Length: 289
Image (cartoon, rainbow, N blue to C red):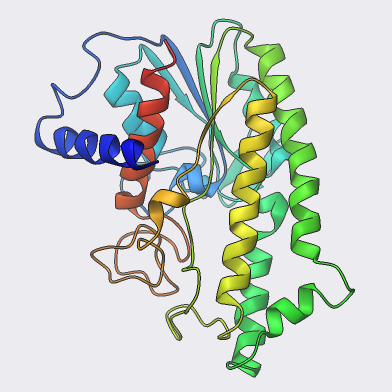
């Protein structure tokens, strides 16, 4: 991982300094499709110019950056905040409109697909709100962990297994509709640190920050396993975003806390985070052909 981290650092520095020379000199991919949820769409990050507006799709999300760096011939981004695996094949109702089933843009000649999905099936939003609510009642304990393990098992780990099965079906259908595509599953940036939290920026109880982090790590591991089993590539931003979580200083973090300092919605990537994910994904895509 150290070599990959160094390569990412060099790439990001070069891309920032000389973007016209840091990318592939000719299109390697002709038709690139970006699928996924809010961690792909980039809600709150300028420019918000996707349709429908309720999807929160930014031109500066990781897919938009990747498309420019790769100089793809045709780019279609249908990622949408709140999307689950269901919305790959069913329309998604959002404020100010409806996002069509995301798979409708896949074609037989699509040759690059990126997808970030599973976080909403896992229940990121519900888990974060539950942990914050319980944390306010018992800030020194671990009420969220107690809540999700009350039955003797661990509900969040059970959910990880369920998400894996859903992602299996998603990847199988992508392969069916776009059989020649390079498919890259992109995981989730680290949201919280592995130990101590940062009340009140993220109002989790003292014992719940590490619990949530372990669950997110398990989700990323599962996504990687399902990607590899399907013959897809996997980009895991999680290990690279340690010290860039929502509890870090504003100039360092890639995910914003409840009161964002950078343009982004709470507990979601900012543009710096999207740039980092784009760099990791570029490294994967550039070595696929």
